Length: 416
RNA sequence: GCGGGCGUAGCUCAACUGGUUAGAGCGCCUGGUUGUGGUCCAGGAGGCUGUGGGUUCAAGUCCCAUCGCUCGCCCCA
Image (cartoon, rainbow, N blue to C red):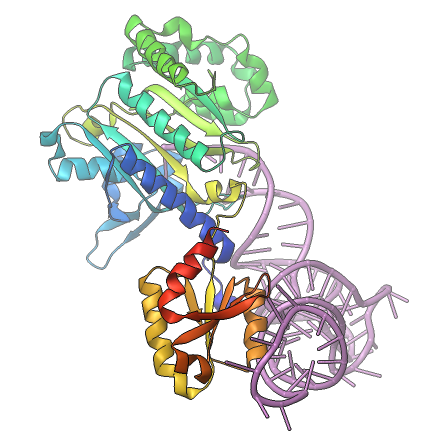
């Protein structure tokens, strides 16, 4: 047992959970296509530098939270902790700049070496959507529209809240940062230990501290609004205008921040209170500085990512499955016909399983407990007539149906 | 990396202050004779009590360590 357990923070997804997971992915892919995003599938691991360059050498993230290892040829590799860096790398590797704007969407496993919590695993899965090459707020709005429609399609419109903020352009952001450092430095003795460390490494993060003492200081703290230049103000106004035009409810959240320097302008998160401390279900923002920081020509970008497991957990109900039919061949003599019949029904899209084993009583019993809708009995009597006995497991009614008419018969019942 | 709670069949849980072959329900399998279900009856499989040490005549029960789960903190790209 001990050796057969999964690695810490990893897990098997099966049964109803797998159905929910699949439903989230299906909804995302359908909508990504409708919004005219191209699918992009990037490797699950990259050279460590790809992530290190985007995150900065000193951050906790690099030093203790990436799944890094050396391969046999001595290369330092890292299992991707997020999608964006890989997409940015792919954009550069493939010379996609030549094609102008790119709207890219993908999903898959991500890896972070951290202590598991509710809805937070070492291997988890994300949906991701990015627009690269558009400097205008239209891209931000389109991404939020996409995200909102996805959440609404999943039945989550009422259980999440959109939090929206701006970090301003680099000039505004820097001015604000300086003001914040000045302010908190003056109150250094009242800050929590954690926030004193943040003062050095990541002052914006003090704004979303959970420490009550820190929070008490926020009231008097400088507000970003006062430091936004005209360009930044206009940009944010345009994003808000778009979101409002679409009728998407949101709250302006001045404490919603991003720590890294390449983030600019828009930051947004869809948050639920149903998942404890891990309430963000979908988050994103603009990262105009990222591609330049990776070594490419300065290129604007916006995107978001969403945790598939978290979305799956929040689904109000299990996804519907198509009615299940079970073919029950009775006796050796009908085996060959059972195979061809099953093949034809499946080719026509009927969801069908075959139960070969046990007496009929056992088989009907099993079928009922599986929640099957129809039993198809094929014995020698039926074979002689080129028919099956079709039994409705809900009503108990049954009658003989010619094989040729089966597909139509099953489909008409599907709609009941 | 730090702190709190918890680990007994697939699942939900029992086992008096340490005391003999660790039990129950659900689920699963088989049977109750030939092709008609969810009920009922009978039987069966399935546990090195997470793992490794220690204390004791005796450990599921006490102690230590470790692994895992869980709720938070740090972090959240």
